[in-house]
Length: 88
Image 1: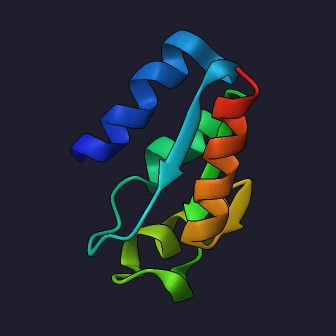
Image 2: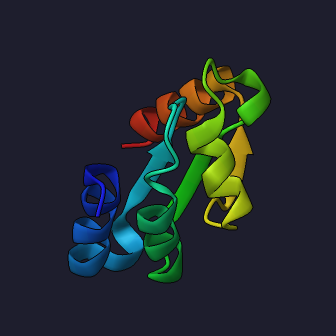
């Protein structure tokens, strides 16, 4: 498996719904399989909106695989993360 899939699959298996997976710009389609596993285990999954990505292949693969619960522009992802940090 590509390393990004493993990066997502390993915590999904261990931490289940406590995992947040974010997939940003990339030129390959890896990451979608691992992100789908995070989603199936109840974790939060976000893909960068492909139209806003420098290379749309990776986030588009996640959208096509229905692995992303949310699809956001990079600034929306930033605000989401800042909101998480603020609430901790």
